[in-house]
Every structure is written in C-alpha cells, then in structure tokens.
Length: 300
Image (cartoon, rainbow, N blue to C red):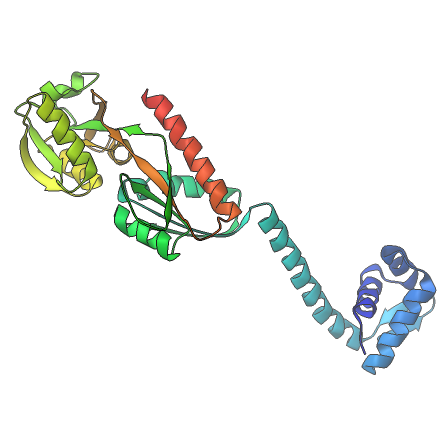
C-alpha cells in the first residue's frame, strides 16, 4: 500500500535529480530513500527510474506520475496558505450591512482599504434602512451592521461609534456659501429640502429649529440624505444632512458648511448577541471605529 513517505521521496528525487540530493533534502539516509523508491515501484507495478551511468533517469510513467503528485502538493500548499491567512486575519468571510449614509461612501472605501491587505478575503456589503440592517444581523445573514440609533431589538448588541455632526449643504453660488458656518437664523424663509419626518435626524432638526423659532419653507421631503444632496445640487434649496452623504456630493453642485448648534448623528455597530465574532470582522470594526474617530477630530 502506498504511503505518504514514499510519495515524498519520489517527489524529492524528481525535484533534486538524484538519490543523494533527495536524501539531503529529506534529512534521511541514501539507503532509506532507495528503499522508499523501490517499495513505491513495487506497490505501483511501475518502473519509475532507469539508471544511465551514475544518474537516475525518470521514465515516462514517472513524469506522468510526477505531474499528478505535484498537483497534490500544490493543493496541500494552498491549504497551508489559507490556514496562515486565516490565522493572520487576512482571509475569511466578511458580511457587513449599513444604513445608506454609510453604505454609499465611507464603508465601501474602508472595505477597499481593508481588502488591499487581505486579497483572499470574501466580502459582501449590503445597504438598507437601520431596521433592516438590524434584522440581517439578528438573523445571521450579516455578521456586522451599522445603524442609526436609538434602535431597540432583542438579540443584538450595540456598540456606539463616535458621534458625528450634521452639516448644512447649499447650492454652489448660494449667498450663504460665503459664510464659514450656518445657523438656524440663516434658514429663516429659505427653501429647504427636508428629510422625512420618520427619520431621527429630521426629528432633531425640527426640535432645534423650533427652539429658535425658525420655520424654513419645506419644499421637498425625502427619506435619504443622498437624495437631499442631489436635490440641493439642482439649486432648489438648502438642507441639513449627515456629513458622509455630504462628502460624496461636495464639489458636485453643493457647498458644505458646518451647522451650529451641533446636531449629532449617532451611528452604532450592531452584532448578534448569540453568535461569536470572527477575528476578521473584529479587525474591520476596529479600523472603521478609528477612521470615524479621526473624522470627528477633523470636524471639531
């Protein structure tokens, strides 16, 4: 019966070209290699080598067998490479979902940088409303999610990211674009592209404007900040949106300005309470947290 040691000896002879070199490569004696090759030939019923002078000449059968052996060794090497990549968190599966404000720009860029050092990583990225993202994580469809809070759902664990500040966006050339900062009074009487009342950011914007006795002229409503950015770029009005959506449109027909008093956008990483966290997902979450922290420092 063929054993792995026989195949290893055969491969060593084929690669090194002789019994002596093969013995040195395997760190065994020459008689041991000779015996392994002899037994392999007997077990296979094939003549694998002929002697030409002092050298061994592989037969056609040996050359054919070697091609198959080499394929098997390459497969074993590949298994070892995958194991090493998994051990070093450079391979595996990463399934992430996020609310639209994050899934259109900041997370795809973060994933791109993350994958640059992990070419064997299998990634899936999804976008959807916060409730849908939480459901995906809860069901196990995705391992990691990013949602806007507050959000309550049994079976999930929330880990807040640093709070970012909403920004004012104006059409390029708007008179208020000359200001370094926009405040509630600046919105008095202005045409305003509003987020839908069901959104948490809209609730906070309305509360702040009410505190200052300001009521803009709401001309359009939309549930998504990126749609608000697109509308503002046409020149029909101003808006207040999350900074990541604004960043995607800055220089494309809109001007972005800080808004004060600050209106914070709270986004949280979401994990399942019932599943272990993979090392690669933990690494990604840590890197994105650091990136958001650096972004907040620039906003301050």
